[in-house]
Image (cartoon, rainbow, N blue to C red; front, side):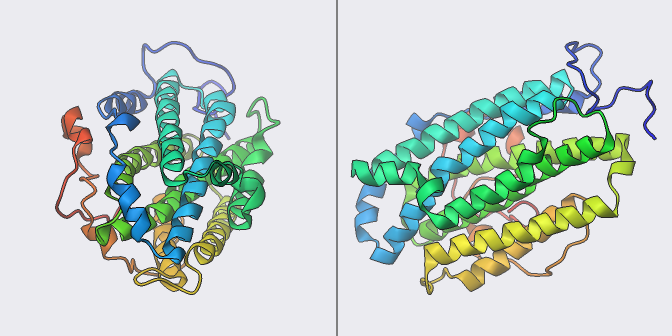
Length: 338
């Protein structure tokens, strides 16, 4: 049982005092994030317009679906940050980081808005893209998956008991491992597939920076899970393991149906079969990071995810902020983080 005299991260309340710090690592994550500021205005999409005209109808369909997902995905993330995570993670250091993350999500939303304005000049097409959750079944299904796993904590004002804290953990894990760690990483693969063919460099540049932000967001959320596991290990029982595994399987299947919508019967170098292997590999990495057994045993089939010049993820916090604003050529291994 939890010692009632010791304050834990999920204990109800609203701690305000930053000294002495109980969770200094969260504060360092906030400081690291500040070093990596970028703006949408730095992303040059002019060359992408010419590239779009070169794409086949099937590739143009893929891009249309992809930017429609982008337009809605980060809005789901932002709402959960404000309505759930900020409310229940009782650490002023963590709330500093969450405030910074909310700013970064707003930049992502602006980037995707700019993408739609650039890629879809027809106002009706843009309107349809922004309403993707209502009118595109494969995107609606992904949104419904998110709400099903995340909404159970919406009516909880305080995490007073084990069941409430379990629901919060499922929300957080869905948020980090499935939305940011699987749905977005699937989307990134399509972007880097185009760039590996010399196309859509503006999209890839912006995605590099989004990729780095999302990697940090996911790492922070996993650190929160680690902290809760240390403070309240009784929450991490076989039931939670089974629920998280089921959640991850459902996320993979939802993303695969999205892949089939994007790829149809397959495009050169990109098809549903390869995407299945990639998603299963990513899902296993997320499960392993959470301390649960992997379930698929698949390997990453996309060499461009390892060879793409996306800036080093392992040491980017040590780089000067100006490096964030430069395209970097070369190779990077994404074995641990893709």
